[in-house]
Length: 95
Image (cartoon, rainbow, N blue to C red):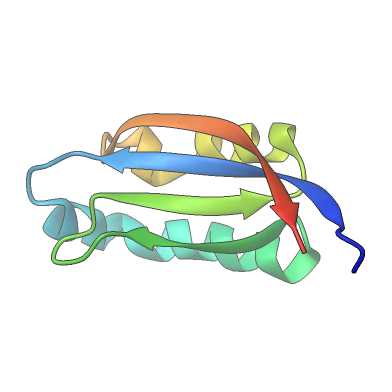
């Protein structure tokens, strides 16, 4: 059996602990619009919240590290302080 390794880049968000659900509400449409745009054109592979009730972070998978960093730089969640820390990590996907 042959194994294929594909390099991706993961953007990992840590959310603030106070009222993230309420605080993200006015920013959610803009954030999700950015996600949808990048999913549609293939720059973003998948994305979603981490944790439950409330989520404690987010994970977004990109083909390109520069695109992941550009996304974080433009994201209203980062701009308006919902993200306490973020980082881009290489991810070796084995299939």
